Image (cartoon, rainbow, N blue to C red; front, side, top):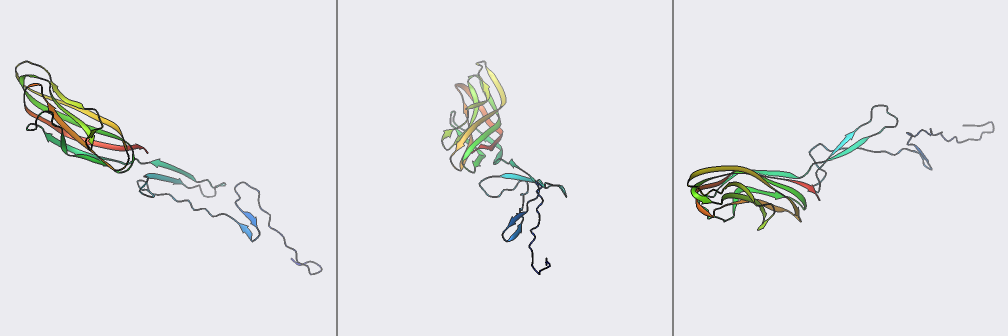
Length: 211
């Protein structure tokens, strides 16, 4: 502004010291930081390395301070296969055989919970002992879950018997990279005859639980 002697005075603007005031006085003038807060849609990811849902809650209009709430929800890598069936009647006892279609691919390194659910059935002609239908999970040639009995007939009495049963076999598996998990099964018999043996209604599930 002009003075009585024609001099000009610079008057610096006063900055409100309130906590929510983001203005700064710089040599070039007033500066207020600009911040853009954006989220991604649920079920999507920024990249292939992780699958995370980001939730962004905007402040109410006129709020001071304007507080943005940002949260993240882990969406684990997961998948399943099924249902599947394996007829073991014509397969020699103790011959471990893949259940067709019952494989899942773990897509990346990490720790996975892998679960197989299935039912088994057999027809046993006695006297017979230790007639079983069993299953477990494999990666390549290595068994990674307990060898689980689906159905068992251990009696030595004479006659024809149909036995059924259901069970789960599960494991925590540490993958060093992509890996294929396969459900396999077999029938077992110490004495007597199994006229039928099968794994039915099989499913395999997986989800990543840790890096």
